[in-house]
Length: 76
Image (cartoon, rainbow, N blue to C red):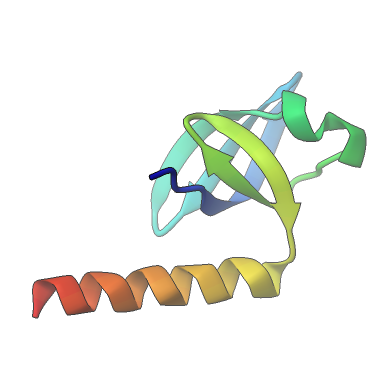
């Protein structure tokens, strides 16, 4: 199974972005979404270090809430 995690772009240098989610920072390759012209503040789905799709802030928040719920159930 594959999982892509929504992350917020904090900064961009060339084709790489510094992205955050839940206090975690990752350096992400933007090559696959370059035609969408991502900017700091945008949200992307990240899979194995690559932004594979841009998403809205609402979609990112909904995904984070679901992941938090799954984590809470696993801890129970």
